[in-house]
Length: 424
Image 1 (cartoon, one colour):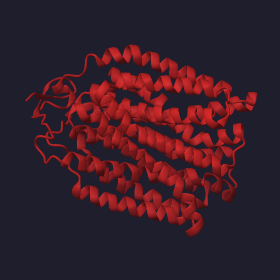
Image 2: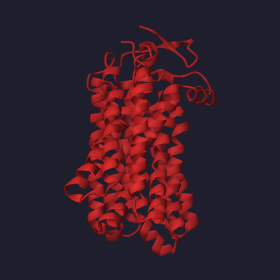
Image 3: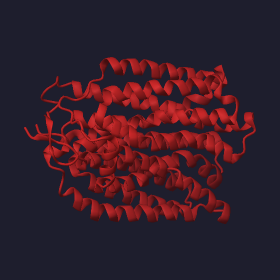
Image 4: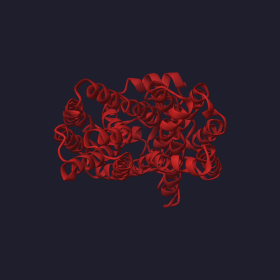
């Protein structure tokens, strides 16, 4: 059994244990299931304002910029908040942080549903604290990572990542609940789900046996995490693959309506299909990374995005060429997102998994903001999306080359077992 290493490489006071060897065989999968549910519920809450954007714009007479700000505030806070929350999870564990994040998200959800939707100022204040729900991702990655041996971490974290489907739950239910039962309905339902999960997590969740606990202060850990190559390599790649997924999930209805003249409902349904395929592909990307290595999976995924975006730049007919291009890109972006966190699990020291995941998750969330803005500017300037899609193809191609060279070389020298979080 190897000695625990703290972030400086000095031996710690605890030993790393194989969670599979020191707990019932089903326990890791139960913990994974509960973590995935928690991720989905918190992301459901995090995404409540986005589907209501047009309705809030009309009822409060908001400008387009004000509407965008209302939607953007919780996303930005949730993305940046992953950095400290990931580091706190390294220190205190998912057993404490999952119930805490879920419970803290209840207050802004109730505020927005009962009173906060009546003015722009209240929406911005509520949205600021609603961003807490978006930090749940940085809790789950180190929590799940500690429960599984290296050869299964890609699949496990990929399954956990499918919890991002919580945003799809919000998209499919929020407006319908408001129409049927009033503005408070989706917020009250989500607050109840958060409360149930917070209690369940507090009672049932357990951190993995032998979980590595860092000893340094928070600021020192974040500073040392920022110096790790994996932090910036994975952050850049996640900004492309998950940022691309976020961008398409936000902007695809507008693109389909403008470029192909689809009705709003038809465009929204096609966007839902894109999201669901990407969510389903994320565990597959993790599983393939366990078998073939995350660098290879990412290289193939980015190649598919490059070809799909380049082909779509010519605005081919939607049936079948356009549909095939978008579905292929959805699968590739989902699988690539799963592969990035397989890479994080493989290359991060155990006391830094949460910190690395927080920074990488923040990069992905923020990466989703740039493409819609660029697409809007390009269309308003040229009356076509071709240049924007060509730019996406170029970025994906550059990321593919970076993965096939720099990242692949790094993965040929993995973190030693005692530093990778598993010595069984």
